[in-house]
Length: 361
Image (cartoon, rainbow, N blue to C red; front, side, top):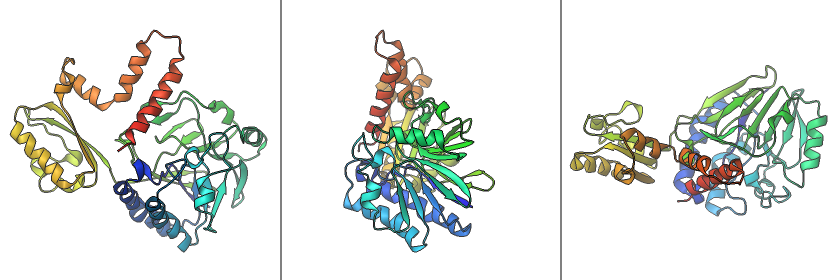
C-alpha cells in the first residue's frame, strides 16, 4: 500500500497572507493532486502543523485551506490521517484543544490523532506519535516502549537535527529513544534531512527566507517495500539575486542574464519575495532600471542589501556572507560571549525568535 505523506502545511502562514496562500495552492493544484490521481494513491498521512497559528485562524485562510486541500480530498473519498503538531494546539501542556478537531470535524474522511496509538495499513503497523507534552508524555513513552510496530510516524522534536537548513536544534528528545524502530518519519522541522533510521520530511513549499535554496515537496511511502520516494515541488517563492556591474556579472535564477530580466524573466518575481545583494555598483542608472523592472513585476516584497550597510567588512565576500546567513552571525556572537548561561539554550531561543521575525510581514 502506498501512502502520501505531507507535513507542516501551515495554512494561514505569514499572518494570513493571501499571496502566500495562492503560492501554496499551486502546489496542491499542479503537483500533489495530479500525482496522487495519476498513481492511484488512496490514503494521505499528515504529520502535523496543519495550521500556522496556535490560537486562531482567519476566515479567509480557513476557506482557502478547505478549497485547496480538504474539499478535494473529500470529493475523491480519500482518507487523511492527521497527527496533531505543536502549531495545532492552543495550550502547551495539552493537546485536548486542537485545530484539527475543532476546524475539520465536519469531514468524515479525516481522522485526528491527539494521542499516541498504533494504526494498521494493509497489514503494516505504524505507531502515530503526536506532539509530546506534559499531558500525554507518560502515555506516549509507554506506547513507544511497548509497541511492536517497526515504523513510526510523528511530530517529534529531536536533538541534533536541523530545524531549517544550517540551523541545528539543541532541545527536545534524544534520538536514541527511537532506536527500536526500523524507520521513523517526522514533521516539525522544516528542513528535509535523514540521520540513521530517522527522517524529517520537511515542508511541502517555501514559506520563509529560511526555506531559500532548500528542496521542498512531499513523499510517497510504500508499506510493502518500506521505500520512501520524494516528489519535488518545483515552485519557488524566494529569489536571491547577486549584482556586480563591474564585471558584468549579474546573476539571476535559472541562468538568466540582465538582458532577460525585462522580457523573459520578469514573471518569476510576480508574487514572490526578492532579495538583491549588491557586490559592486558603479552604474546607478543601470541598477535603477533593474530594480524598476523587478518592482513592475509585482513582488510581494523586494529587499536590497547594499554594501554601504556593511562598511566594516573587509571584502565583498564578507558582505555576501553577512547578508546570506544571519543565523550564523547570531551563533558566532553567542559563542564569543563570556557567560554562564547555557549557550545551546540561548542559540535555540535566538533561532526561534529569528524565524518568528521572518514570518512577520
